[in-house]
Picture 1 (spheres, helix red, strand yellow):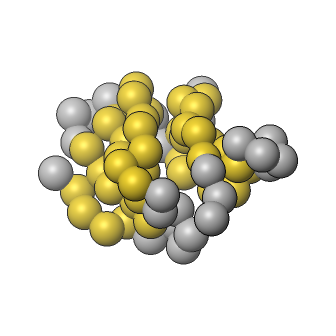
Picture 2 (spheres, rainbow, N blue to C red):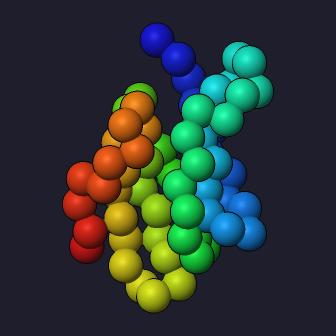
Picture 3 (tube, rainbow, N blue to C red):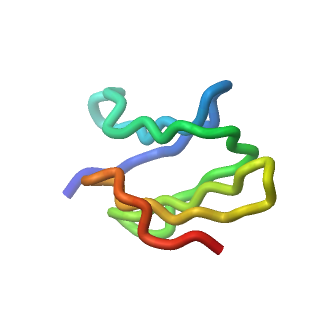
Length: 65
């Protein structure tokens, strides 16, 4: 199982594999905050106030709050 870290960048969020340093997933958008929910899910808070939850493997939007 891989371990990930998330980094907010100017055009979104990068999910980074801790061991290799490789970017696993780039999520576009105007993000202000991001954190891992579990080993396959990341939540991203955007400037519009929406919190969006994404699947790390597929990049699919799972929920928008």
